[in-house]
Every structure is written in C-alpha cells, then in structure tokens.
Image (cartoon, helix red, strand yellow):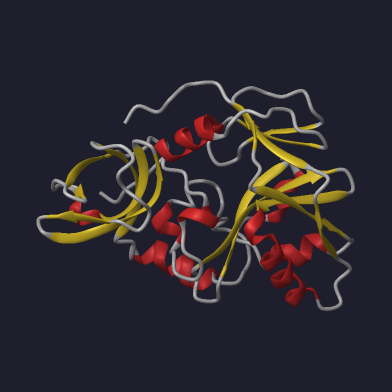
Amino acid sequence: MTVPKTDFCCHLTNRTIIEIQGSDREAFLQGIITQDIKLLDRQSIIYSLMLSPQGKFQFDFFIIRTGDSWFIDIDATRAHAFVQRLQLFKLRSDVSININTDWQIGVSSAQVEVENCFFDPRLKELGYRFYDKKIVSEASSDVYENMRISLGIPDGAHDMVVDKSIPLEWGIDELSAIAWTKGCYMGQELTARSRYVGQIRKRAFPISFSVPGECIVGDKLVANGHEVGELRAANGSVGIALLKLEALQSEIVINGHSVRVSKPSWMQLPE
C-alpha cells in the first residue's frame, strides 16, 4: 500500500486535554501507565496506555510536559471515564486532575510555530502534535486520518475494543507505548507473558479495498471460506483489519470483494 505523502495541518476536534498537577504526579502515574513516566525527564511527550488487570486495552493517550503541569491528550469521548479511573487510584496523593478545555490539539506534517509542538512519539511519519489556546487550522482531518490508517496506526478509542483488545495485537509496543524495563503497572504481568511466550496469533494490518466505501467497521474478513478477521477502521479505500496471522498467505475477501493486506515498515512479525 502506498502511504500518502500529502502535507497536512488540522485541528483534532475529537481530542481534549486533562491537566495533571501536584508533587506526587510522577509516582502516581508510574504505577498505572504502561510507558515509563521518567522519559519525560528527557523528552517532552510520550505515548502510553492504561490496561485492565487482565492486560486488556482501556485507554490510550499522550502525556506532555509543559511548564508546571502535565497534559494528557486523550479522545474526548473517553476523558471523563479516564478522570474517574484516575480518581480511584489517587487516595491521599498530592495530585489534581482536571479536564482543561482551553487548549486545542492539532497535527501537522511540518513544525508549527506555537510553544508546544512535538514530534509524534509513535512514528516520525505522523509528523507533529501541537497544543495551543487558539485553533491554528480549520482544515479537515481526512488527509491525516487516511495517512494514519494507511500506516496501520490505531486510534485506540475508536479502533480497539475496551476490555477486549490485546495491545500487542495492535503493535502498541512497537509504537513506543510500553516500557519493558520499568516496574509493575496494572496488567503488566499478562502483557509481559504474551510477549515472552509468543502468544500473539493476530495482528492489525492496514488494508485497501477493491470497492471503496462499501465496507463498515465490524464487517468480517474471510479466507478459504473461514472467518479470519474483522474490519476495525475504514476511511474511503483504506482500513485497518485485525487478522489471524495464519491467513496472510491466502486470498482475503470482505463482503465478497478482495482486499490487499500490507505490512507497514514499522511492524515486526514472528519468523
């Protein structure tokens, strides 16, 4: 699949900011998230997850170091649930957690002249994420979404399934969201076991459709008469499908039409 190289700069209207303050914020988050919060000592933005005790996906987000606060960049539809979950772990910690709607979130293929503009920590092809109190661009996010899907990059809140999706099936560790050398976090034991035992039998792949626009999320993919996967994201002629690895050598169809499965350059598969 050819990934589009078109320039883009757009406001992500589906994202919002949660502001984290307080002297205990580092220790508080370190025991909850999958990434090592200490990375913020040497870089300004990290990508991470929060998992269930069973190691299943619940939230994905960015954490940004800015001034005296940390920002959490998260899908707006999941923000209140995330705040409620954090409050359960807060106890007596010196931490304040508040949704801050003053800030706008954008993405751009080139650096934007605002105070808070950083390379996307997942993949350099995703360009920059920037944060400002005014909207820099009213352009549609369709170009960005098409590129994201073509690269096989999940938008957790929309493409993955809460309390069901397994992060390693989506390559989240390869997208710099999981630190394998940090201490414990919720779901860490089962996530580590999946990695070291090699239990991953499915992966999320970018696909392209022979008949654009006729497939919707949830449609099943079939090979040799057997169901081998499910469409989890779609935008025009491209999508992301969660597929059984054993099916990759066969012709795969969706709604009777063939699809092309691509392996993005960042993805590592078992030998």
